[in-house]
Length: 134
Image (cartoon, rainbow, N blue to C red; front, side):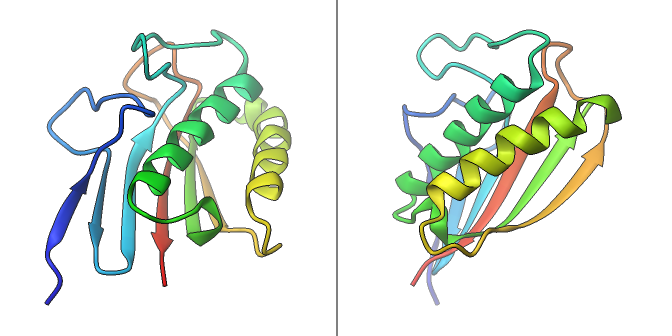
């Protein structure tokens, strides 16, 4: 049986709570929910701009996926959490540009989008991911 291992990278923000950036077991990689945080400073970026926050958040997700030895093209599921329905179109446009650019196979990940309250007022979006590697 393959051991469960923590995934950690300085290319994504350190977790603020008692969890890892990601966990890998065998070919499976689960990325914890990420937000629009600068990994170097720990600052929340792009207040009020859900498109820019979505792109930054996906960059953080991608960094963790890659730290696990996978590529963004290995992501099979993304879950997007938005604070308001009005941000859906702008998030969706930024999301679409990012995933199309980082999925050279042309097979885009499945996705669920949910409207929620997030832990920080600065966060308009949070995204987690599940990847399967060869």
